[in-house]
Image 1 (cartoon, helix red, strand yellow):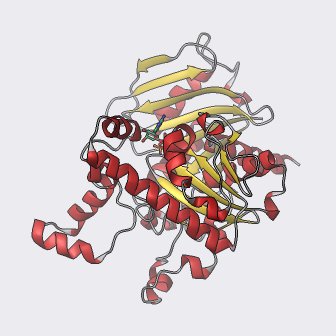
Image 2: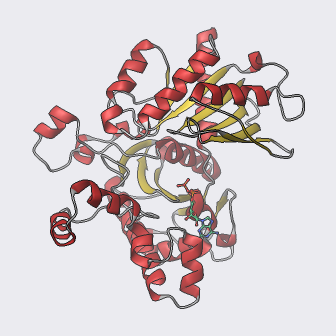
Image 3: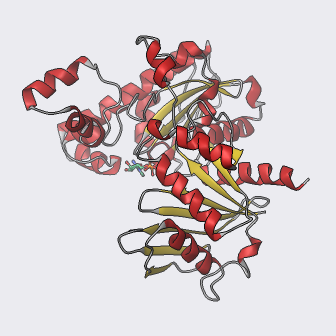
Length: 400
Ligand code: ADP
């Protein structure tokens, strides 16, 4: 099946066209400046990218532009738009409503709207993308794949915050976790590489990119994860603080004369490794600065890797043991130095890194020594492929 995968933001729309049987990427691209002009960059696989300013007052024009390019005589990869069997949408928040990917109908749309207060910046854009596809591609099924769904298996002891219980009852304030599609994909691939059934394994998946989270996956199910009610919790990230003592907020707000929304902007946009280093949110810049002797860049890297190390330990404790640790996303897939720093000292839980094997970048590999009791792996994530596969599976059942 040919599946169009859509990741709609408020003024942008990322897309990929994938073949669910061969897993081939046929084309990908990005629409930007929707509503304030419009620009598209479209790349058919193996051919030159095409960029153009095209007016896109709404997401519907953006989708139409994507479809026009997919069948374009020069830049296209399809003869006819009708070759697209279904559309898979990335949706950030499924709340407690969705533990799996679903075919979108009126009831699903209503449930997604109920989740808007949980992700006010993201879910409305995702819903706009779905409405645009329904308008421009009538009759083509749409499937929603949620970032939170994989973590719906967390037990109450892992998802309840130690706040008055009524906040959970009244407002659904709890740990949801994010990056679920990525954690699920790399765990499945790791089991395949280890040659063991996922249902028997205790895995810690480390998604380390601009946003970062660690997940404990026991017998194929997420039982603990570091992101919480929002993606601000857990590890320090590029610009996000991760978990901090909430008592600090009032202390700083009083002294710096900040209101709560200004404080949250600082926690989301000016903290993390950017905040500590004062250099950059990008780990490549930090590596460079640290190599030139910048102490705060080095400190930012040390704080980050130390917290990841501790999270691996606590995830192993949550599962009562460990079989493998997986690194993925920009930092996890590419940085041998950070991986080495993170697992340094974790031999006591059976993790022995092979420095030669660790030199790998951006491809699937086992990087622990042959005699390491537990495995360390690098698995490049592929969230779009998961969205395409879930969509194909749901749509193929429809046709039966
Ligand atoms: P996002 O969370 O936005 O999807 P990515 O998964 O693409 O982000 O990760 C981006 C991060 O990965 C950036 O901080 C970037 O510096 C980092 N990164 C990419 N390549 C390397 C590398 N070779 N060494 C260290 N960090 C890297």
